[in-house]
Image 1 (cartoon, rainbow, N blue to C red):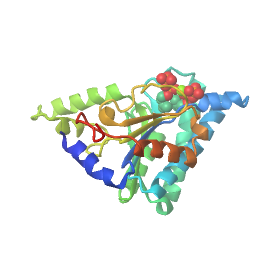
Image 2 (cartoon, rainbow, N blue to C red):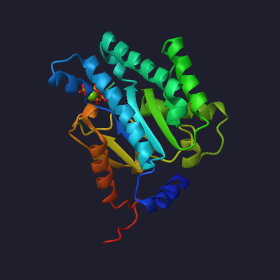
Image 3 (cartoon, rainbow, N blue to C red):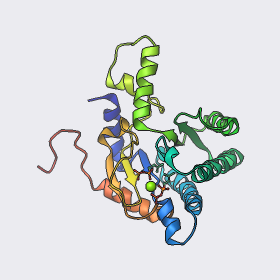
Length: 243
Ligand code: IPE
Ligand code: IPE
Ligand code: MG
């Protein structure tokens, strides 16, 4: 068993997941159902993300990792990509302004090199300035792909001269370094797939799928997901208690 999994087992005593990951899906359909442009759905999705971050912090969840833009989302029309990036800039500006009040550590996972310098600068500022907060951590996955992350990890490992490998050592090359793996992975929006999210880290995550679209995924929906998580028995390959 890896050190990460031992930590997960120890963290289970509170019954709460220590790390929740969310594929924030369904913004486009949410807008379409209201006869609105997809960008309006992304705006509502951004509001839902702010609400989720605050709620997870209130519950005492240590890590929230959200999928905001995938390496595959570049296939979308340019105006949609631009609207998502504009919302991200808006969020980062607000986060920088409200940082002392919110006290959330913000990390960005993904390759930021294709983004314009101003957006990259704001991402870096958010990460640097919020690194003093040790309570809740929000990881925003941006131009992120699980396979891309694994390939980059292998490249970093090779660049360091191929030091002896274990699962824990290799996991340390991922964007999040040695943070605990997600305990609960939530996908709203009705699809039942992972879409290239956290392929390495989700090895033993409990999966929760919901038909509720992300902009409508409120505190009550989080409560339902956490209740479902608490009802699960995590066995990590061992025999079950009730068997
Ligand atoms: C998720 O919502 C947001 C991103 C992928 C950026 P979608 O835009 O995928 O919404 P649907 O799935 O089309 O409804
Ligand atoms: C996954 O949603 C990516 C994000 C939520 C950022 P998609 O809408 O891109 O996933 P697919 O295309 O339905 O698999
Ligand atoms: Mg989608």
